[in-house]
Length: 110
Length: 111
Image (cartoon, rainbow over all chains, first blue to last red; front, side, top):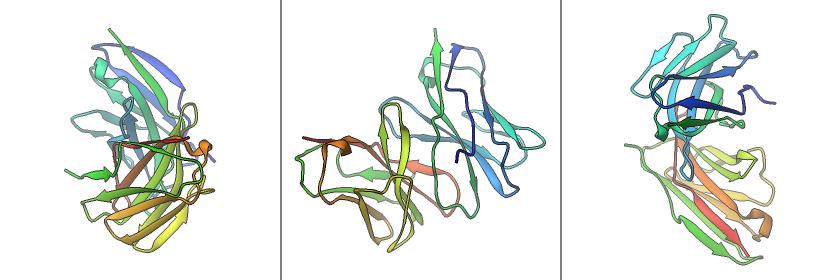
């Protein structure tokens, strides 16, 4: 029972912003939205997470809609090193389990 | 920085062998996880543990068991390795809730 839906793949031009969508229409009030990415042959890496408000860190920005049913991860200036599989995960405070969906394969092109 | 260390980067075992994959984390995290990753199938959760000696089945526990005798160490055990268990195995840890940190993975080949 997938809690999130992401497009399977997307391309992005180097230097441009990459906007990665995620639908989580069944999210409940205490569930956070997490984003991870996995660069080829490496373990997944945490990017950012949020509950209601938009969040920004040195890697990315996270925009969550007011109804919290969807979110967008923004990589402001994509580089070739951002080519990876990006996973959007919904996880509550009482959820010990951490499951991943198929994610979005993002290819940044020069 | 949090460190999650998996004992081997590459491992080759024979069919029928008992295989231990070890994972150690240094941040006093309560939760630890074992995943396998295969082309086209993504990351699939095998087992997780939320405390010492506690374990829960993930989405694909068949053919595996786990052990968590100490908080920092979580072992994945293949009682009798089979060729369909050839895969990349990833370990992760996290606080009760919150971001997870992953090891670099162990590529296991069963011949």
